[in-house]
Image 1: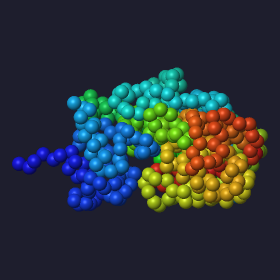
Image 2 (image 1 turned 90 degrees about the vertical axis):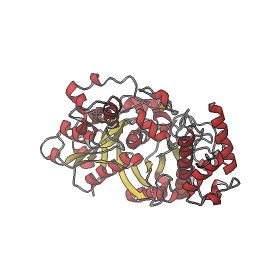
Image 3 (image 1 turned 180 degrees about the horizontal axis):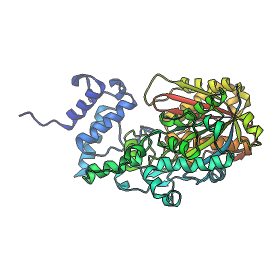
Image 4 (image 1 turned 120 degrees about the horizontal axis):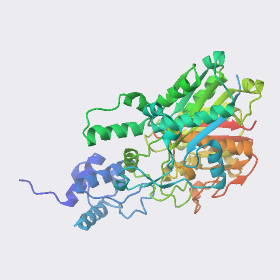
Length: 89
Length: 402
């Protein structure tokens, strides 16, 4: 049986699928810009994260920089998802 | 080519149950946006909207009509009644044969879809009311208006998301200008403040949770509204011959497509529509004193729209006034251009410029005179009404004082 995926692996997987890249090309240092994700792609990523982890991501596309959810790098997104998961329990 | 004038106006929306109440609220800078009230609203993260409140359909329509009229049709019928009454027209014979209805709506009978999906999916019912189809169809409102007023010429519904009303009124304008029709009932209606309607919009992450603040530096998204605006457009000579009270002249119209992105607006597409409307109206940029902006309060629309206006008008952009009344009635989607046309009529006929309320801080990317927070008394002779839809479909009307 395969090992259950970590949060990081799952988030990278979501981003890779949305950006149509290989998983290896999505590193924790990558930014959304590096991955070529536009605002519409980002909204789909947020949706996939919410569905995958059963969390509510606080994010408004009108003010992405002011959002409580940091999207400045893949690592920040992983950290943000982890804290949303932790907050559930 | 014939000239086209407006001889009747009607509306119902969060600001009031008539065109005059709506204009009064716009003049006072009143906000019609508040807490939404409908089933399951607690499951939404967006809970505000410009809802038509204290509305009792039984006060206006009998049981058979209620069975056939979705809320969006009811709004259209009430608005049409007001507009036709004001125009003083009765339709028979040749006039009836040369008059029709063009209405805009994005979602049509959304409440009917929702109620009946609930019945069959949630409640497990296996039977729905026999009139579900004629009640939910997008052309229901246009058809009922044609039936009510004996309008036997061309009638149809236009659906171009947030530009639906402007596209519809543009078609009505063309049909009178070309000589094909004498009078047209036109405008638009929308009622998608339902659990499903808001849930769908929520997903886009462009909605504000607290207020619609177009052009303000701290704006954080759009707020949905609902309602209708319906007008009587009429051949100028016909209106003059019968001594009708003329509210304003529709002088020009232009449509463009961005051909670019399904949700992001384009400065070029918007700018070409604005310039096209001026050209069609033979209106110089300097003649425009007021623009009713699309002004949704999203980051993307407002800066794109300001850039388009600045580019088309050049130095005159700093002299004209541009406001977004969505700050007061919310974004009425397919009905919004029609509700907003009232602000243009008020500017041209009464010399009162509706404000952009909720304006709190300047945005260097929206550095135009957006008439912040308070209405202004200024006589203007030319006005534009902008609408830029998802899907990149733009429609701009040009109007003149008569």
